Image 1 (cartoon, rainbow, N blue to C red):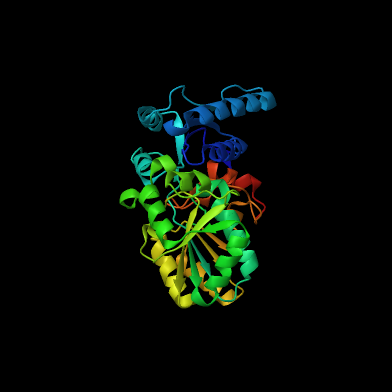
Image 2 (image 1 turned 90 degrees about the vertical axis):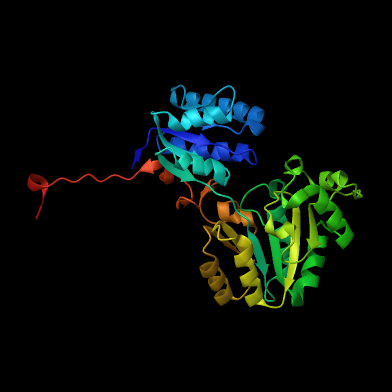
Length: 339
């Protein structure tokens, strides 16, 4: 393995700090230097963090400018970075638009894509553990990570018990009227209200004019129909829609539809190994978490290394230092052959 050289990394606004830290570690470990193009919406925290990482890298290596950026992040600056002849590889953590722009650069692209992860719970699941894991995963960073549970599909025979368990773990169940009121504010015209993305449950309730409990909930939950915008839209808010289905086959069919062929992440809680395997093979996601919170799929309390760039569109999947290194072969023949 050899380094590529200078990697041009595009960081998102939704989880800038963890992505920048994780990318820096992986890219430097592979022997590269990094030019970050932060999202303008996360300018202050991104620039502060990049400066601190650069200083740490210098103290450890004695080499300056291993992790750099521009003083004023803009769309135009990102375009210039992508076209720069000294940028060897592009690593893009963002939406489909910015990934598509990188693809047109003619450079190698390691591109992360959008996700709308469904979570299935069947009648064999450990409901107490499932409830705790689902809330932990969906509430983590207020549901900003692309791997977080975005919808919950539960077999009807255990739905009431699961919902009660979730309330026991500090989820707040919304009434149908409250769900409609919140939807009008959070998902106007069926798309996420950017001003409310990544806000706390209490802030969402307040924005909708709904009562905020004295003990703020960890997560808002609501029973909805399968075609509800809460289910079909990647809202990036701590609101988890719940859809009841008749059986496991119906749950898997709906999960496949909700995931929309993004092949990003899916989660399932079940004690039936055959069903778990069938779901994994059917959904074909880069990350499939069995009986755990979604973040176990990126190495937090689960197997493997930690990663915040899930390169589904370009095929690398969960990225690591090895992703950011060139695989080379060196062959010697004749005099040094023992044949």
